Length: 452
Image (cartoon, rainbow, N blue to C red; front, side, top):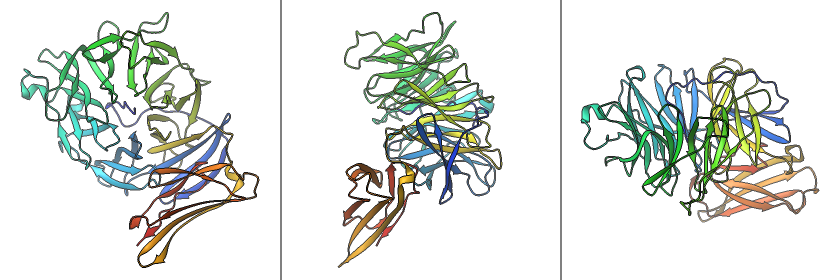
């Protein structure tokens, strides 16, 4: 599940990268670039800035797919836009909580509920925030028995699952941080019995986070008890950042990216640690999120110095690079569609921009074999309509293979017949529909026809 973005700063990481560029395309206000990284084809898309704004950051993504982040407006005030991950269009905004502070969304579930932390008083005080599906913000309650005035400004929230359960930390009056789990926004949290912070929660109510002490240690909590996550052999520190629904925990051991595999149905099985590779040219890496297919994302290098966004897939590290002319990138989240969201500097203004990546590992149909992707909504008379999408290829060499056409977030495999693949949806709902060729990805911008 997508998690975990820190609240310390919007601007993360600096880097330098050279890459072989492919096709450059414009889709609405977004820009996309395609390039090769080993055997993989990567499409990176710039979500741009708000009108008059100077920076944006992609912080989390769900499988709807919707992205949430931060962006400055023309008054240099921070807003919290929702982007449609398929089109790059802004489809709404989430509220701030306290006008004198900055609420930062850190995780977004598939119901568009969010959890995050409001930074108060230059980072000395924090408030945990929950957002409902419409983007309305609510402050989370502190641990029971804590002075409410003290407790409400010593809370951090980092993760939320599809059940609406939230995890983070709440300090007591001795400034001791307790890892906690909120069942909902209105009830006091459950103390997990860990001095530390919790970062992620899956739909089984299993929680991961970190124990604070002479050295930090990751933990897994479930069914009322927790277990410490071991570090790599010869290392001391372990940190857990995210957890998925199939038994995979993402984190790091000292400077090395790792995952722990555990059995969700067998509490007696000890989680097994595995080191992830670090891309060439870097000596350290950090994980930030994991999806239910076992894809892990994060960044390699040192924050604010030399980082590149990274995808770990099938035991391999894929360096996602930076926008050409930019200086850094970092991946903050990944959904179950494989779409990766993050932040990086771009050419032209050297400002932070929200970015989204998709990765094609090769072996499919190359964009060079495609001629056009046409979408229309045609009236059948009597108020009925047909939504039609047609992909035309250069020749019939791919006949019998399949492509994927996604309508309003719902992917459909379509078989190529000769040099064409066609999809028809009868009687679609009135209004606009987003139609995209999602496999192979990045070949054409999405179309948004209207059926009226």
